[in-house]
Length: 421
Image (tube, rainbow, N blue to C red; front, side):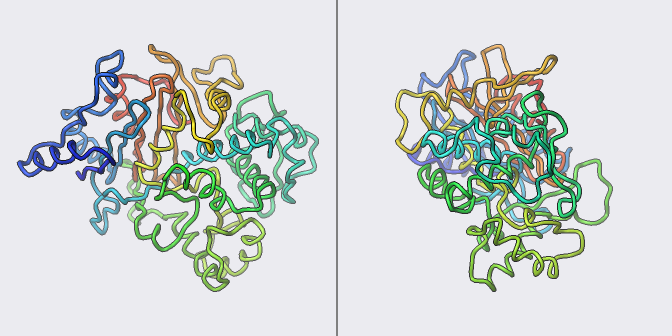
């Protein structure tokens, strides 16, 4: 169970190393009194729970877990458990990169809100004015969809089309009237951002968020280094399949990487037109049924983010309340807008902000998001912006939700009604 070093915490790390040499569990970082919240403790899981965590992971067949905690608006603690790949025995360590799945969406939403602050996108103008992909259907409701609808999941669009090469994209219900979780909507907004900035998604994220925030181990794309450091996904504990699960994004990227190398243009720089041109060649290289359309072989704002657990916790710090913000960050008013309910439906226990879900607790509102890719990656992040605290749990198992729910409950004391979306 390696401890991830946190910059500026030398005394803590020295003490942890000394205890580790004696075979003791790594201690919780000693925090100043200001970090002790209303319940008298930070959101760092206690030693008793951490000692129990490997047994929980084994019960649900989750080989690897990364956990990081934010207190007082800073990443103060992180730790890895188990294996990044159960077949090879590669351990989770400080450089392990997780597949974040839908935890991609809040980070992309942050970029969009930066562009809104700069006057480059109007949150309430029709998205089709910025970009109208040729796979859109001929439907009048499409002209009602705005960037705000995308980020609050009120576009009426489906999550993903079953046959994207032959099926046109159209709303199922009138935009702005109901919550319909949609990855397709985020991808369309991604294409609009391409048009606005003239950059690929990953280039834009590196320039505007990852670089300034010092998130050095984050990418929406793929390369040899990410391939070597990324976790492999593992089946849910109740699946009896004999064969190893398909590593969908890894295999799609692997086929596309061969074409990218031949073309001399890295995948991180690919935009939709590049993926369109490369698609026939990638289809010839990829196993049947793995790649269906250009969106399968390029960065995807809805699902392809990879980070270390520390990097994602760093992103959580950007959502915390504080008196001053750096010039590259979103404004305070925009931060508050992201965490303000944008649309509600009767009977729902959660609400939609811009890029985040929200739920009321006994201490006030928290923001959160989950992630699930290919049935083999399950992740969760939650924050309390006013108390400036948060926790992120990344896993590489199909039953990872059973693990991250227990971690969050043990750390926060909240038995959240929220589950997946």
